Amino acid sequence: MTPVLNYETLGDRKNPALVLAHPLGMNLHVWDHLVEHLKDSFHILRFDLPGHGKSKPVAPEITALNETSIVDAVLNACDSAGIQQFHFVGTSIGGMLGQQLIINHRDRLLSAVLTNTGLVIGTREGWLRRQADVISSGLSNMAPTLVSRWFSKVFTATRPDQVVHWTEELSKVDDHSYGLLSAWIGERNFIGELTPLHHPTILIAGSDDMATPPSLLATLSLSLGNPPLLAMPDTGHVPSVEQPEQFTHHVKQFLATACR
Image (cartoon, rainbow, N blue to C red):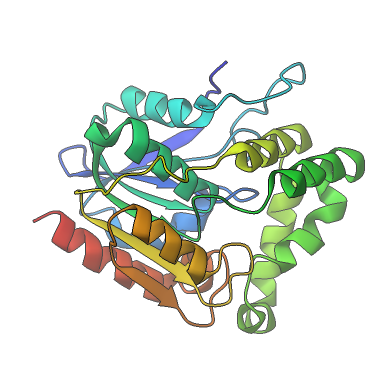
């Protein structure tokens, strides 16, 4: 079963399309700053993962997400919005969705920005343990610990308000949906599946990202034919939130070239 995602579109439909895919445990508002600076130039679609934000949770009787469930849901949202080809920006699990687009649907891509992601993220055992812990303890109890891993020490010290905000947002995520998405990440291994991409592509890493360090993005870059890799200093797992001005600058600069 393909989930139905909550999504919103902004900007003129006559402009080039841009699709934004957020990290696990967050929602479409991670892109607020980026959207504000791109909505006049792009037709933007951003969405919530299942059980996140305003998207409906995965039904309790569903015990696993198949390999293409989420990317199919994203493409369904694009079809509903009348978007055929698009530029793509995805972080973490969003970057894994970007890799699936590259593997199976590159005809729909105009360019790709993949951030804080990898061919493999963590281990299958670790993600299944995360799923079990969430089901037994609940995100409302686990959120403070999980959010502490998202951000750099600099951001945590200087923007405690944002740490509190995203802890509250994670607490609202549906436990079952989060657990299934955790297991889905654990099953994904794109080693040997990616081939060099001739579309404009850039990879962005956070120097202080514990989950997907720059070395993981460097390996991904090799699989894609060595597109540029930027490592943002004093940045953890969510550069669009931690360093919104710098992140937006990099994306705008890249898209300006990609749209020529």
